[in-house]
Length: 113
Length: 114
Image 1 (cartoon, chains in turn orange, cyan):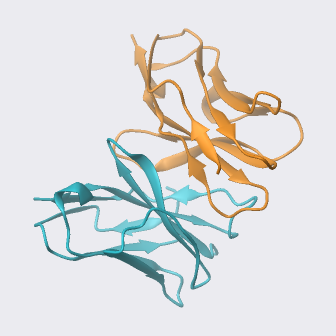
Image 2 (cartoon, rainbow over the protein chains, first blue to last red; image 1 turned 45 degrees about the horizontal axis):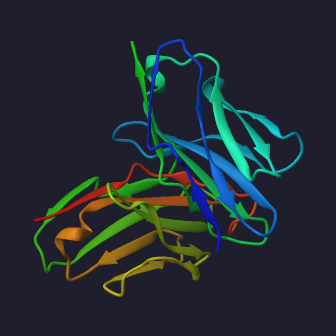
C-alpha cells in the first residue's frame, strides 16, 4: 500500500535562514508528487508538483523540491524563509495509474523573527 | 481564491444529529474529493466522485455518505454525529479523475459536535 511520511511534525527556523521539509513515500510504481501549503484558517493550496522531466521543481514563493527516485523522497527547500512562510506544509503522492491522492501528516513550519 | 466553494464555513451541532456539507467545484472540474482534517489524524481521504459516480472510497464511516449531483456539486452527509466527528472537512476538485490533475481545495467546513 502507498504511504507518505513527513518525519518532522514541527520545524522552527529563524527568519532568513534556509529550511528543508522532508517527505518520503512508498510505492511500487511510478508516482506524481505534490507539496501543498495551508495557512491558518485556509484551505490547502498547491506550492509545486512533479509529474515528469527535471527532478528539481520550482514552485511559488521561492520554494523548490527535488525528486529522488532511488531514495523515494521529495524534500521541500527554501534558501531564505520569511515570517509569512509560517504555515502547515503537506506532501502528497498519487500513483501514475491511480486516482487517489495520499497525504502526509503535515509539517508545521514556524518562522521566528 | 481556488474557485472551490464550501458551505457552511462553520457548523455547531449536538451529538446524534445529522448535517449536510456542500461543495461546488471549480468550473469545468468533474472530480470532487472529500477530506477530513483533525488534529490527531491529519488529512484523511473520505471519498471521491467523478462526473456523478463514486470513483474511490477511503476511510469513510458508514454513518457518512456523499453524492455528486448532475450539476457536479457534491454533498457530504454526516449522521448520528459523535464528539469525535468534530473536524475540518475539505472538499477538493480536479479536472480529471486523478493522474495529472492537481487538487484545488475549498476553505473547508469546520464542524463542532457538542
